[in-house]
Amino acid sequence: MRLFHVSEEKDIGVFYPRIPKRKDLDQTQGLVWAVDQRRLPNFLTPRNCPRITYHIGINTTPEDQERYFSSATATHTVVIESQWFQMMKNTVLYLYEFDSSGFELQDDIAGYYVSKTVQTPIAKYRVDDLFQELFDRRVEVRIVDNLWDIYERISKSSLSWSMCRMGYAQER
Image 1 (cartoon, rainbow, N blue to C red):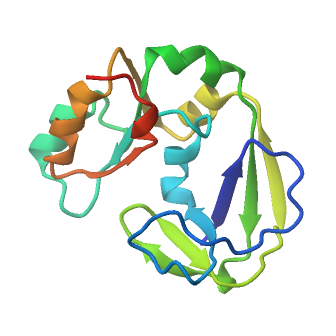
Image 2: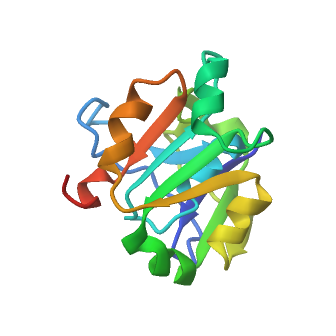
């Protein structure tokens, strides 16, 4: 299994555990976060870009697959607001790969893994064209005026989904 940390910072040599900002996690234990390769497309956007991502999971119905994917070969979709299009075109990301042996699964649907110890990347990859990187991974990209229009539908679907940085989304 391959694990990655995605960043706009190009020179991170060491990752130190940080106290999570999420209140549902232990606030006394620092963590290094990583995402598995399957859910990596959820993070191939500028950091603060609000987005709705979804993919086919074990509970996805054929009806939802047909309803929410326009291509039979796609299994993953990233939806962003049109106001983020230029930023996405101009952002460079760095994928830091980790040895997975130091990590444990934190969230299976999101593909989150965490480590309680300092981690040093085993490789780094530069991504200059985020759209092309998503296309190369056979991810459907949708650009919409407002994310809230699809928010409710996806959250009630049988898809596996993630809604990131929604605090930066346009108001309803």
